[in-house]
Image (cartoon, rainbow, N blue to C red):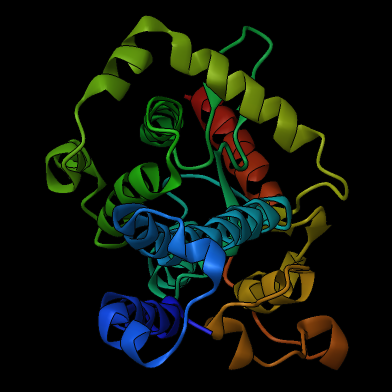
Length: 290
């Protein structure tokens, strides 16, 4: 029952006790009550409904706190391994991953974004990225934004803005995303100070330790399960993995079948690891010949 029902009962009790004068004329009150001063008798009945209301509210607050704690414990961890200028990563973030927020599925998800992808560390400690130096810069800027703004709603809107510009071939306008999202330029201090490089190295190590090893990006992992070619079906995996008592409405309309259930072979747009290495070898050979 909701609290409105109980408040109605309490109101009726007040009305009953406030009209006790007329009632006392019709019925004989117990003798021990006759010894009480009239004012004490009045306040006893005034406090009774207030105490009842207090007892009703305390379990409700406790229950709400318990429910929130349960949701946090049962959250599904989803990690996205990607690189900033891969068009397929950009498409996934802008047109697919954003559905987590549009459907409020984010309420049961611990979303982790790892902007490293198919980059690698050279023997001299510098980085090489699949889509050139611009990608290395933007990977670090996104990593710093995640660090400075750990709230997923904040750093995701910045990354979403930058990746949308990538899709539109306007990634050179990325700095405008700070203004467009209402975030400060603090991540640039992280980038310029060299702290961003440390974050990149941490992401590089995490990506290298994936099991199974990533073969392309975007590489999506839900509760330690790599979705591989079925990454666009991530919402189904989240709903299957969630063990909470009440699943979000978004889960009810999803198909429970996955790529691995149906064994459907189809083209999946991705940026492969081998393509990154081959591109670097071709560039290096071309420079040697010149």
